[in-house]
Image (tube, rainbow, N blue to C red; front, side, top):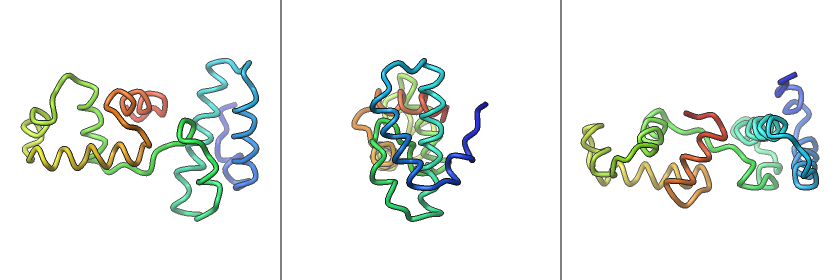
Length: 128
């Protein structure tokens, strides 16, 4: 049914249960997997509200990202293009150093190590 809040309201024990379910269930359809990713993303993003321990138990591949700033979201969108950091800086009228700092922050928040991983994760989490 697309419900998310019902799961999140049950707190850390539900997050742990869903993570275990995801690890053990290899027969999930792609649609089920995407919905489970959205539910786990909601748990992860709610950590600012509830400083629960479940945020450490959710694996990086299934967790959402920390809240990205509007500028980071804008740069994340530009990372999906062929533009270099220097060209992105020109597009946004900021320094290349500023763009690189934003990119480092995006990678850290998304728990990724490359541009391609960041763009892929953004697609999975429907950030773009």
